[in-house]
Length: 91
Image 1 (tube, rainbow, N blue to C red):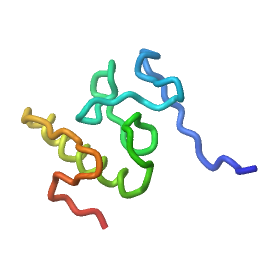
Image 2 (tube, one colour):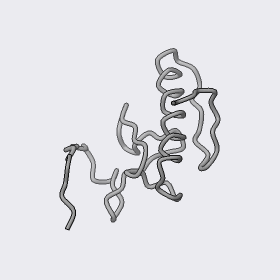
Image 3 (cartoon, one colour):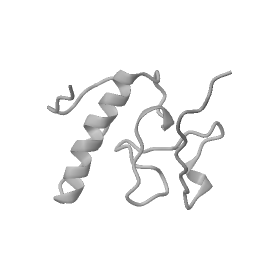
Image 4 (cartoon, one colour):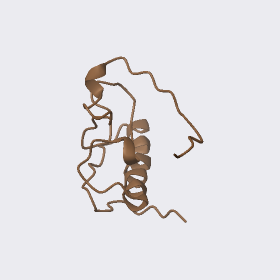
């Protein structure tokens, strides 16, 4: 049996944001569907792709780009599974 090391509690205003298996429904910009200003990345998303550190890193690139875009009122960049579309580098 595995021991839980850390639990994050998250309250959403709508159960419509969750899939039947408990993942969060996100749009092409990684924004949680039915939620304002709430984004999700990594294993908690309902994106149909392998749940790997590599894909979470791609999500992080898009999220960082989109948070800046939203702050300066620019168009956001959609996430394409498996494709990096920013020039950010994470070490």
